Image (cartoon, rainbow, N blue to C red; front, side, top):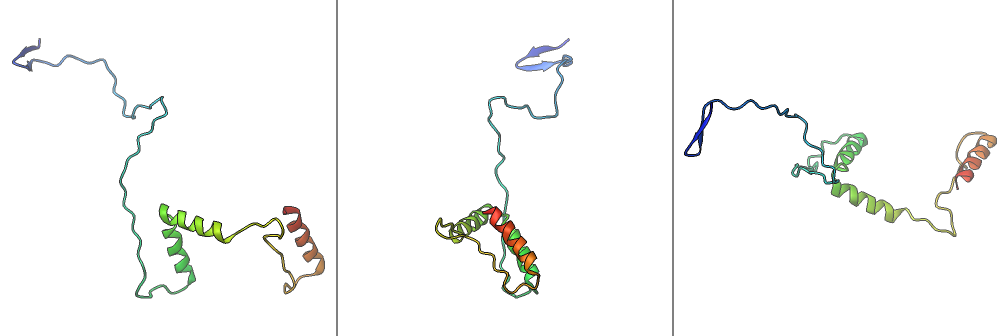
Length: 115
């Protein structure tokens, strides 16, 4: 039997029939809890330790995982690639390709079907 004295409880705790879940409660109102924080960093290779293009591409792809860099890449790409109704955006030039004319015609037909 527990009793209270000056704000303190003496005795045994009552048994609780409540079951506690280890999973966080889901909110039905559509609100989402976002945990802030995180640390991102980039580096510049000033020593020239990059040996080939593959290493550079790998570094650039790692840098593109940063949100600000990804937005900058998207902005640059969208400004560079333009579409004009008067002229086709992509032209297929197979003049220096060493394949038969029938293969070139098939490639042109496929490209024209995509336009």
